[in-house]
Length: 313
Image (tube, rainbow, N blue to C red; front, side, top):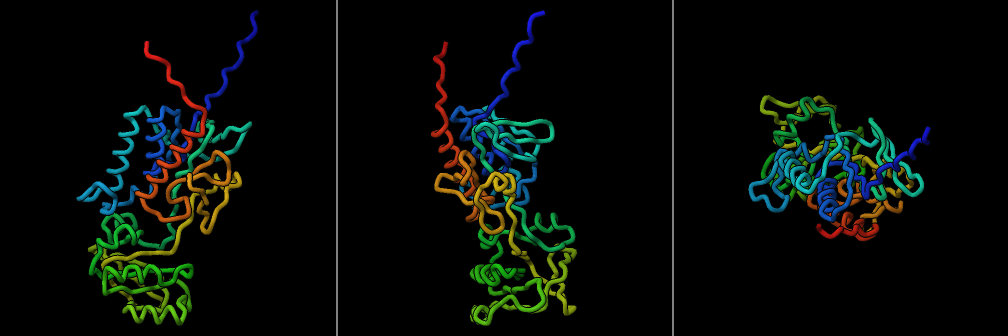
């Protein structure tokens, strides 16, 4: 009986991209246009999908919805032969210089990895959270949409890590800004209180216990002293946690909240491991994520062995 043929070597992709938000999709588009073999894994819960409409992403004068933008990027990737595996990567390790990602259904190997896994917002218990975000009554990004709430009644729920910064930022857009916190006792120092008073920002010392939505989906904040405070818009700015566990398990350096530290080329401290978007320490903006993706993808292409195209027949 002839011997069994040797097992085929497993496919090793040029790049594994983890996360299919704007950053991950942009990186995949760039790499496919560089003729690179790319595996993109996405669990389908991009934070961008929560955005009802973004007015500060360039090129869309009337604004663009988060899901519409994602659909456009997926369609663009498909034009260059890219595909998305609808699964999350559960673990990531190095094996003989190759990254190996395991998921429900198998494993994927790659010479390089781009982390585009984003963050999760710390928030308050709010009934009908998704409906409130979709209606614009609850917002998560003052930089993105402060302009869109000009002259509204704005509530900010903050934390000790940045007690007054968001309230002062929003004061540029409305004269009716109120700051709350969630803890017993003031998180605001005497100097910060003077700044709030000078800027005309109201500070409610009693902590927020819950947030309810009226019939019009406007937020009503209930505080520990039994009072109810009605607003047009609520920004629950309690911080975020980066989805960086796969990278930090490999030894990647991180900062507060787990956000990854990268160099000018979006490379982490682990050779071959890159990161883009909100999972990186910096400004959490879609335009920033897509720019970082372009940088990382181009760097990867220029550092991997060249792909030499055969002459046409």
